[in-house]
Image (tube, rainbow, N blue to C red):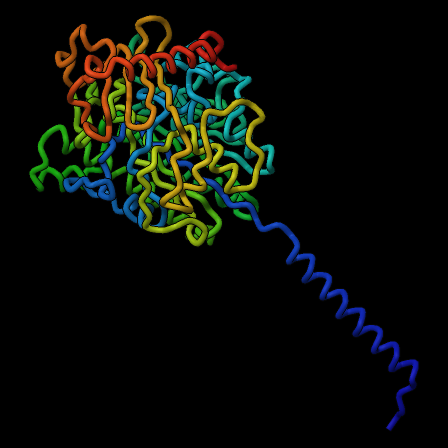
Length: 463
């Protein structure tokens, strides 16, 4: 049997030692490597009433996907939209700034939009190495610099105006009807295809393409915004259940949107990304009572008002965040939150730098982690439009003052004496009685807060 030389044994020992050292250093490097940043999906529904989900108390419509999301996350019961109409609400979400500061005081038209100088959530995530996509409704501008690809989104698919027919993808409003469906700024045609299904397909393809690196997906649904076009099986179910018109039309559309949210989240699970993905859900404002919405169908529960109004029914919205294994599950938070808060909250959760501009949103991370944590805001502001007749509101603590209030549901319930409407939301969450005459000092204090805020941002939106 051949003998082994001492030099050979030393060489073998040296090789094993070197291999062990290399393995140890590799393990150390992997241990020291920063964890993968989470994906982010923001689901924004359109004109969904503040209690119109099973997890928010609705008993006459089914939302199993939203209920599951709430069971796997944190649900807010006192969450506010940035505005009570579409465009400014979306501007507040995407910039973390009150819409007036962000330069979008009302719904945008053909020639205006979110100012290109504003820093969006998409730009924040793209700067941190995320792939970014918008799928669905935009309603923040029609020019190339104000469309999604000009505002930080690598990929965009959807419609640029306020609503479309879900099968023809035409916008019906004033003047000639026009087709409104675009992919990365180029008009595309999918006539006869149900738009929510197209959204799920587009989002699924984006997630598949970017499954190995973090992505940000803004999934902006145009449901249950009119035209009510729910799945036939849901409409049949609610009519058999005796749900009255127009609630049956609206409920069918809500269940239809819920089913597409379920398909989207099923795709996340199929890709093995559930534990690596933060999902945020919110409605953009309260339900609509416009003629095109059959004068209603949504439900604000105990709250007064609807879309267009700064009474609670117009701005208090369902809101949920879920990150399985990293955030509490099945939790409920009663602290006040605001749509502008998602940007700084997601920045903190994902470890990315927020925009280097003044933000009105505040991180909700402490509230998510601790049910006893204080709400992050001392004062909240809203305003639609500009000038003396603009509707506005300010809330501090339980006190809320509305200037030039609008009650779109019961317009005759307001008189000229209600030009300043004061409510204490702890005592009267339904805002049934104007307390302005009983608490003039509180009115003066809140009015002073509003006027100081207007001096700060109102004369120079976008500052």
